[in-house]
Image 1 (tube, rainbow, N blue to C red):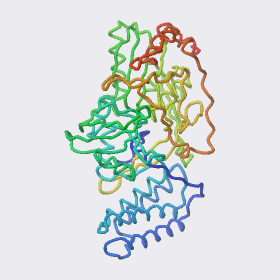
Image 2 (cartoon, rainbow, N blue to C red):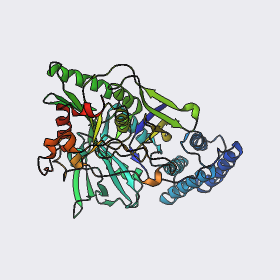
Image 3 (cartoon, rainbow, N blue to C red):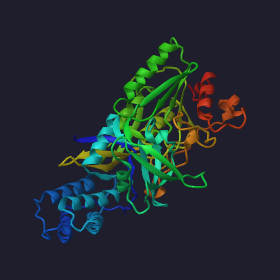
Image 4 (cartoon, helix red, strand yellow):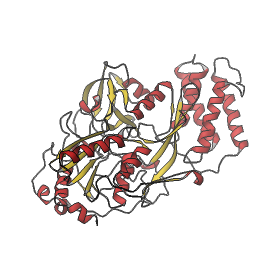
Length: 486
């Protein structure tokens, strides 16, 4: 499979801390690997010291060297071995008869998940799942999750449109306390996800802790093949509404088809467009660049910066705009992450669109998925991305030009996504770069400025989609174009 650059929120594992260190020397790496071999010998069934040609040792050594040379932060190799030894001991305690391969995978799992919230070891099942998701179809519940360090529970980042999780009414910010009758507290994220997955057609019950509920909420879901339809669209009168649910291999092409169809329906008289990125957890970096490029000229869209300055990349657009001269509004919320933030940040920085909603999630790092021997792989955080203005997205997120907070409880299951079902959920600040400078706040407006009729329409009902209503009203009065300086 080689390496595939992605900006993808998938399984967010508990964060680790690392102090800045100088790049490890060859002698330091050799000493750390030699120590690992001796610790590995203490727990393997044979009790013998593995040779340097042992396939499981080679796998571990390969991954550790990749971490030391490719991860966005430098690490002390002895610290990495400390974490790997914890993994060895953990597996031995759980299964005293565990074989060499199981011990090695546990060592890699604990070592990688200690690096940051996004790096992880991918066994054959998870590696296949990752490939399926980027291609747009996979089996499961259709839910993006992370570990909540404060509670020790699994937190929902975002349900995927049309998935069992979305139909069951799961929301951004829900905490999963039980899977069937098993408590989540004490599990790691990998084990919790494994329990939620299963054969298509089987059921699983989740017990949720919800911020505005007085008692736990129990929901039953039927596992299904989740087919991600990346783009859905409809006309709001003469305004195009385009919902982008994920950035997979079909997204940019589907966007082109959506705009062309709505242009035909309106006989070429579209007034503007609303791009809905709420609860979009991200996806492929190249698709995010392509989507932003659809509305921008030959300008910078995003820059990706890693450890090696020679590997830094700037991604720019090409001449041409899919909707030239028409106003554009982008809807974001705390479930908008990663690739969504690339698009929203580029369109905002170049004054091509105004952003309505609440601050986005703040997942501004790039993961490289590398295939290893035996159909397994690793996901490693190799870079951070920066907006055209130079602002760092990681943890800071993208702030809207017009803040419109949720009106109340979420709409009924199956209803279109709206800001009403978004909870304020952002990464633990401990995972951020402590030396990073916060980006300057964007120019802001009030609803009374952009959509006075919506602002004065009274107390919104829970099912009202106020960000969309305001966006459509602003586009129809052409206020977005004037206020964006065009």
